[in-house]
Image (cartoon, rainbow, N blue to C red; front, side):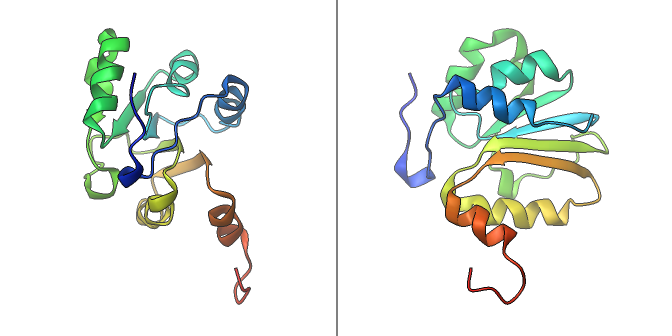
Length: 143
């Protein structure tokens, strides 16, 4: 099993019902889908059923080894890389993003998504409550 690493801000999703709800929130049919930080693949297993063009990206080599062992037939779409530093030209012209984002880089993920806004069709994610409140806050709000 993969151990969550505090320095990466990892918190692995374990609730299957919540995982299904996150995946079921996908609405737009994109040409592709990128899961950021799949960890142990709790979301991934439902995404494989729903999406034909899926890529999994994680910076954690332990998670990558675990996923490649769990899904050997899909090893080519399991990418060991830092999303924040990765050139995303390998993805289709339009793609969606999904994930249980690490709390310590959630803001940076959204800044990169903004750079890719003409290609990203949707983002479905689980965030720390405070991050979500800040994203939803109107301009000039304390949050």
